[in-house]
Image (cartoon, rainbow, N blue to C red):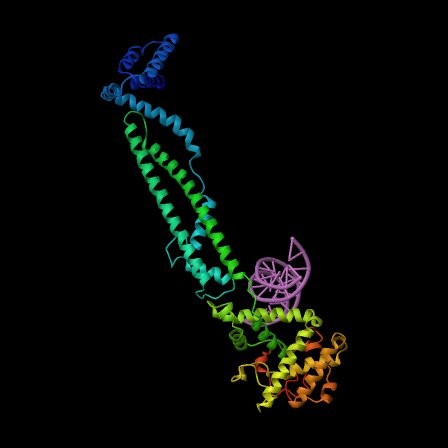
Amino acid sequence: MDEQPRLMHAHAALGMSGHPGLSQHILDNTGATDGDGRKQDIGDILQQIMTITDQSLDEAQARKHALNCHRMKPALFNVLCEIKEKTVLSIRGAQEEEPPDAQLMRLDNMLLAEGVSGPEKGGGSAAAAAAAASAGVGPDNSAEHSDYRAKLTQIRQIYHTELEKYEQACNEFTTHVMNLLREQSRTRPISPKEIERMVGIIHRKFSSIQMQLKQSTCEAVMILRSRFLDARRKRRNFNKQATEILNEYFYSHLSNPYPSEEAKEELGKKCSITVSQVQHCPNIAPTIVSNWFGNKRIRYKKNIGKFQEEANMYAAKTAVSAASVSAHGSQANSPSTPNSAGSAGSFNMSNSGDLFMSVQSLNGDSYQSSQVGANVQSQVDTLRHVISQTGGYSDGLAANQMYSPQGINANGGWQDPTTPSSVTSPTEGPGSVHSDTSN
DNA sequence: GCACATGATTCACT
DNA sequence: AGTGAATCATGTGC
């Protein structure tokens, strides 16, 4: 009900802030009801406000002091506060509460998961280990792993340094603004709530900067991670010797080219995979060997013809080795296992039956024979000779046995792929598809 | 630059 | 868990 007089007091207060004489002038005219007169007053007030900048600082301070000491000041100030509370705050009130930023939460979670934010656990080794695991690599301390860890630590350090800087700047700025507002609150109505809101605005601004920092950090981690994984994925060509060893094993176990874990490890060692491929990560050798055998089986099966020559070559090598070992009085024709070959450390003699099958396919299978040249045929003859000398197989047996090419059965699979060739059964009889035994 | 070979990865299946 | 098949990605030779 008493709104009108209060508003008029407010006008008076406005004037007071600029000029003490002016306030008196307004106060003297509070009873005026003439509209033109009021406009004239406002014009005067504005005019005087405009001239404030011309006044010296000392003079302004003196007037400010006089204002603060004015007997009407507290009452007028309260009125101003009340008016402001009813207008400005009510306008802003609606847009206060914001939902928690989902993107920021995602970034925080990711940084936490990657070991960038949160408590330090060896420079994010957990994340590095996870990355390594996802790359199909054991938790061994490979060079790439430590490199990844070092770089992640670097990112972490930069992130925390920058974050600290931002927080410090935010706090400094907030303190500064709060002091300023508190100072100003003596001369103009600034409620604690308003200061609080201002602090909130400042924090939001700074948190948006923080979010950019977090985004950049996430990007950096992603790039690092992808590079790390790419490095693990990077293919490495085996050297010739390694390929030969693997091929020898493959073709000498053609009927069942599924090396046991032991055999894989042994092959890994023999192939020097531990040196050229996985010197920092020796446990991966069996995996690499598995990869190689997996690829070999598939590709061999897909295109047997293409691999025939290779098969012959390795069969010949195996046969020659068999012959030489036989000549030295060893048990060349015994169905020893690749790993039990022990002293010689060779897989060559492990499965002469497979070799035999290679020969069979060359000689008996029309599909095979159509693809071999005269030189291969002569090689076959040589092999037969070698085999007969080693007491391996008779021509009669060879003629009676019809095998699908290289041990692949009618279904397109190898016989009993679940049986590791390193445990080739010596009890397998002559009638068996597998002709490991030498009877 | 291209084709090819081949190691590695992924996914579905058993 | 091991495997086959498909696919990707890269090294190599021309």
